[in-house]
Image 1 (cartoon, rainbow, N blue to C red):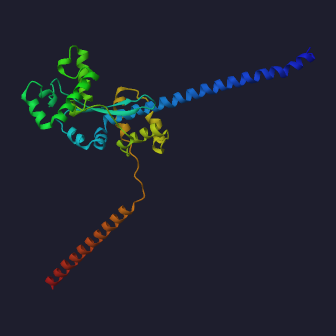
Image 2: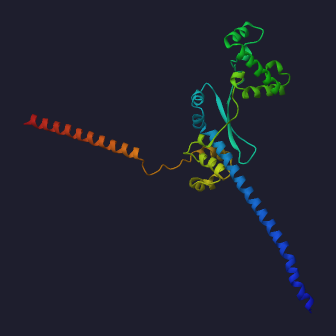
Image 3: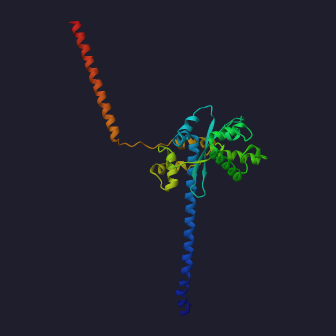
Length: 290
């Protein structure tokens, strides 16, 4: 039988369970939020990887033409045999996109013309360069070379002793500016303006920065997140991803309206001239028959 003591203990138990239930609810909400954020980040990273594969597979020239038109025209030469690679970079999520141009030498070494390697202190070219540049610029160049050596320790072929030193030397050549004797071919960052607006890749990169889904990306999100089942679909997925283009606006601008009206006027004028010429030919034939 329940006595009055048990009835009096109920409010105390409810009061004791209140903070525990609130803490459990807060922990459950935190777990759900953490899981949702992980899902959103994984979805964004999957979209970014698909966009990067599509950019590297199909729209490399379009992106490079916006970044550097001269390099884009140079890479269109089939004899160059170059490849543009895209990578993620940055210390925070979402990462930003960088690119770098690689040249396939097919086992043949490439020769880079560099005054730093050609002009050595022991030949007369160094004295002639000092006269042409002036003592001040010549000494500044020497100081810059010394600072670069103190920073990297491997700045010349004579400093290479192991394979690790050689890889470090090749990497430093790509990152060193051309006026220091390097190749000036480092990883360069891409912005949102470098991607074509007519392709779905632009919407994906915009979503990575603004965290807002565009209408076109909402429609194609289900397909973009699908995982290809075989190698053929995995190989064709970048080209299909890059083939999504936005619809052109139905409304015409003032300039297009003016251009279309001018075209219509020109066509009407040509039709009138053609009909007049036809009438003249018919009249001439009638006169000849009469």
